[in-house]
Length: 135
Image 1 (cartoon, rainbow, N blue to C red):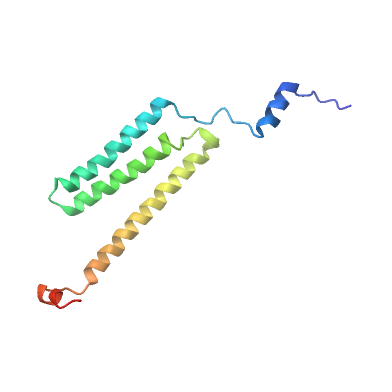
Image 2: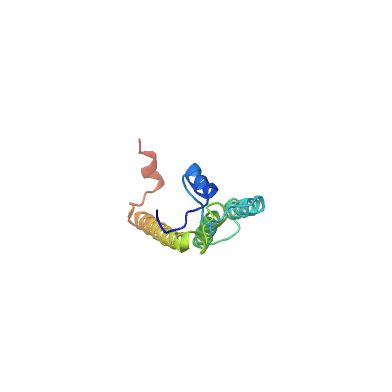
């Protein structure tokens, strides 16, 4: 016989029944946190819509910058309220995933803007007469 103490029968049966165990630090959302996340998401969607449809700002560059900033904030809201990412869950790996996601989003947004700017700059200018002759 082994000299190590055995786990209680109900504990081992519980772990084998479910096939996995949840860590105590895993974050689970409450109804209130889901409602908060939903309300923040609606607000973060409505503000850019209002900025564009209401033609609130004169500068298109400022409008685009504000929309991109709100998009990044909305991604963070989704990761916190719906994916339950915080510094405590899963030993901090979810925080690393959040940082990685923010870096990828910044690279994708800045790269897209860079490409669109250069496409717009390097396009051949067309006058209305040229547009009439197009198929």
